[in-house]
Structure formats: C-alpha cells, structure tokens
Image (cartoon, rainbow, N blue to C red; front, top):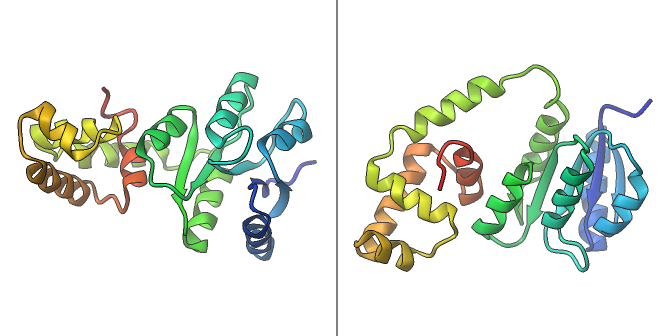
Length: 202
C-alpha cells in the first residue's frame, strides 16, 4: 500500500530539494525527491499516489509543462507549484491546468505544510463547497470597475495597459487593485488568482 502521506517533490536546486525533504520528513510525511520533471515522470509509471510539489522554472521540462503531462495522462493527484517569480500569467496557466496551490519563494515552511495537508485531503469529502461560496461572496463585493481591473490582472496585463484599456490613469488602477486585494482578503497575487479562477472569466 502507498502511504496516504506521500509527497513527491520536484526541484532542480539540490539545496532547496534537500531542505524541503528534511522539513516534510520532520512533519511525518513520506517524501520522494526528483531533480527534474522528466525523472519524476519516469519514476511514477502509470499511477500516481499522494500529492506533488514542483518548482515551476527548471531546466528541461517546466512545472507548467509537467502539469500538462499529468493532465494528459489522466493522473489524479493534487499539485502544489512553487516559484521564485511573481508571474501572474504563469500562475493562471498553472491553476487552469489543475494546480491546487501556488507558493512564491521564499515561502514560509508552515504555508508549504498547510498546502500539502490540503492536497492530501483533497480526495476526501471536505469544505471545498463552503470555501467556494465564500470566495464568490468576497468577489461579489467588488465594484464593476474593480472587477474590470481584476480581469486585466488575471490576463497578466501591467497597470499601464489596464489603464489604457479602461480609459483611466495608472494611479487609479493601483487604487482599484489595492481595493481588490482588501475586499477579497487575498494575501498575495497568487492567492488572488486562486480565488478568482472559475469565478471571474475573461
């Protein structure tokens, strides 16, 4: 039997990979490590248990490309993506391909552990429906203009382009953007992307 606490960690930086392995092992997780997405795909065969933690920018196959491969194979394992770049278009692509969470480096150890615990419990009946309703409730508090700014952010557009498209100043976009973060209670742009996908469409 495969451990229900199995975590596959994919990271090309040996130091980071070792640190994550030590952290998760200390928390009682069973950890398997891989230096590349290619070695991970070779190692798992036709089935995938537990959850996956993958860096997004790696030599060879990227984390986003890996998500696409996992989806193409029909492997149902939740994926947590970690990145050193606050790249919103990348986050949107990762989420649309099925990533459960996205953490920006340097992330807090407790945030990674929390995401992994959520990932490992995702197949059990849980609070997802209630959480989705709460996300919808927060997003419904946005004004029409704030929703327009949010849609621009989800497309990965810079403030200047959003301002041009909406016929407002970049400073006004910044104000609306701050209001969006406050009303949705999103702690980061990555969290805002997670909250918005499936609710705010292009």
